[in-house]
Image (cartoon, rainbow, N blue to C red; front, side):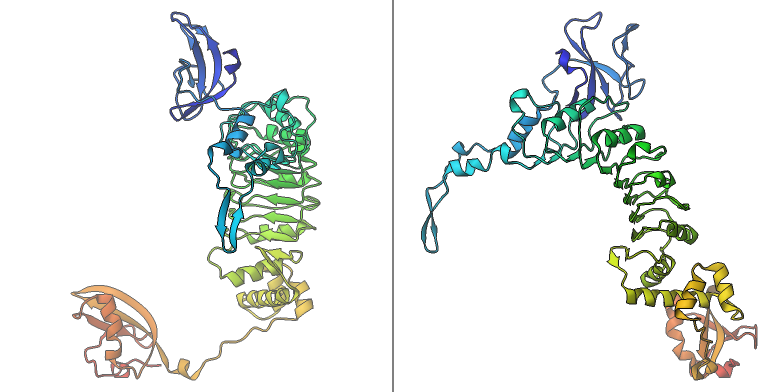
Amino acid sequence: MDDLVGRWFTIDGDCGIVRYVGPVSGTHGTWLGIEWAPPKPGKHNGTKSKRSYFSCSFSPTSGAFIRPVSRIIWGQSLLSAAHSRYSTDLSSIDFPQTIDGSRGQVSVPRLDIIAKFQTLEQLEILGLDTQCVFGTLKEDDLGVFARVHTLLLANNFFTKWTWVEEVVCQMPKVRVLDMSANPLYSPLSFGNKEVELHEIRVDNSPHISWSDVCRIAHTTRAHTLSHGWSARSDISSPLLLAHVRVLKLAYNNIRDIRPLGTLACLEHLDVRGNTQLCDLHIECDTFHALTTLDLSETGVTDWPCVDTLNNIQKLHTLRIIHTPLVHGMAELAARAQLVARLPHVLKLDGSVVSADERTDMERSYLASCARSVTETNELVEKMARVFPRIHELVHTHGVPHVPHPVRTALDSRLAHTTLQVVNKDEVLSNTERPLIRTMLVRQLRPVAMRIARTKSFGLYISNPPHTNSWTLLDNEARSLSFYGVED
């Protein structure tokens, strides 16, 4: 039973790792010294009767002793899991020799032909997620998975990174490896195996330190690294990621992505879902190779921060939807701001920015900037003090026209009034609205009834600046001009 030390197990829904196997003073038989995985509480730190049997890594009180009972699930080997998932005992199935078809009887393929396509040697994608897999292959089984190029081992019982390295070496064609949600805890031990992958995933792995994550990518030479959903906040000193081209850090607690700006090969950065990422402030001469950036569902709120994305010279694809930056804005207005501020972006939030759309969005942006300036004297200079790229866009599209408000014939007939609804000496509402002085009082009663929720109420009107006093509208057949309402 000594080989159980370091093994992951489950019992009655709880998980843990074996730290010690052997006798305990004052008792009979063999005990398992275990450390419960959070949040399961333990009883001690591996010490019993003033004697230390093991030490705890998760917390000082996560240790316990249990008997090796049959309810413990120790997991299964990789080969056993593959057989149970991909192989079927065809001898127990009663296949007919022929079946009736539209043109007569059709013969059924023989069992040996079907079995040929069920052999594990034919697999190219080996998916063994949540199969309680641990350990490596035996020497007699090394050629079984010779064609596998994608190995999915998420949510299993791997507690040692050396096991992972050994498995990858035993499958020489593997280029994509998913080790997410395995009970891997830092500090990890790395072997001397030569491993080369295209993509490595260690998502949902909050117990692996950032330095170990970087070392995993470095030792596997992976060009794509995924480490999301891991409550990661510190991403400083990513020197070992110098070769990484695609970095996925979705749904963590990252506050600043600038430490990644030194990665010379980084082309694709995914930081969506990092709600604490509010300030970008991208500096010049960083992110030299970055072409794609996903900032959706982050906490970006500041337009000047977005303007610093122009310092990323090669950036052409951006996602920034579902952020406080565009919350409350009309979709087209937000897109016009982004397209006009970021001239190098060719694909925004999943759709291509065509040349015609860019022209329309830039003109819309200029018009919006012009409307926000209160004085039209020296319009361009005043816009340029507040908004970016104004001189460049004015040179391309001309000075925007600022329309002056035109007073229509109806506007000239409207009177600015305030209506007051009173019920039993209680003021229910004061509402400002423009009204036509020839309107009858009965035309206002439906609105007042919805406010008062009763038919018995008093309706008063005031017409500043002509008068600041309240006048009771007591006759439904009278017009508002009868009560002194003037244009």
